[in-house]
Image 1: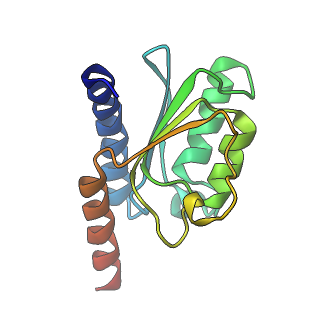
Image 2 (image 1 turned 120 degrees about the horizontal axis):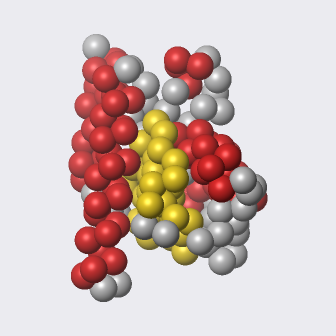
Length: 150
């Protein structure tokens, strides 16, 4: 990966992280997501399962819906999702159906992340990059769950 593309990944992950901070402030699990097409933000979202009382209101699902609406297409080819936490199986399935080209995530989700499955649930052409801002993303999640338990 070139230095330029790494800088771009950090730029957009920082935006996703700022959305995760917003979720944290609203007592939602702090996950933020941004979808980029042609170096432009076409969707951004954060977890809103509590606010919307909807277990499917994950950042990725909300971002997919917004991006599809923006593009007028159910397919997100030539788009990149930046998300602070590895997508769960539900979100990975939706991302597969969207045929998104690239997923960049921060923290790994050992208990619920899609990569724990033996079978790849993503579209076969989807490129996956992990670990961008992983420490910051993990720390925010740890703070949230510590706060929740006290």
